[in-house]
Length: 189
Ligand SMILES: [Fe+2]
Image (cartoon, protein in one colour):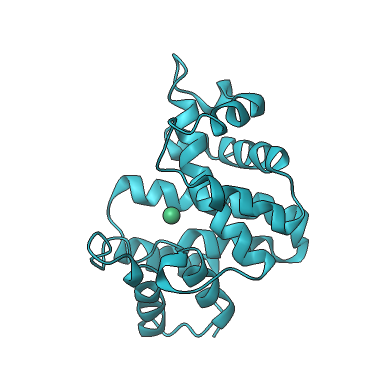
């Protein structure tokens, strides 16, 4: 059965309590929708759902000790909830190459890139005195991107994999910032 946004949101809130994780899920959803407008205009909501659910298992598995369970556990949860959607499942798994699946499709590359980019844009916003996303310029995101010690946990290789979709890193940074800005209140940014 295909999944609706409302259903995806209910499942998310059933399995995820941490505010930071939930905000991160919303941020990745927003970026995925922004990317879909360009890459898959008839699948904007669906790409958003893939973003919304990509970390569903964050509080449900011991990924701190074994990164390979992050992704497959989300798929198990969704199956338990009656969802059967191989495209969604593969996108969730491929966003964590450490679970053994490599991104191949445009959707998979977009999600792999959107995940770290959401945290990166947030980190850039937090260096401004007002800590507001509205203060962030695309140029600043790109400048910080090349400072490898800045937000060192944000995987540059994953973010750069956006180029496999035909979108440049610069355009990606712009799309990510603009998309997150649309829900800045929800993100507390
Ligand atoms: Fe994530």
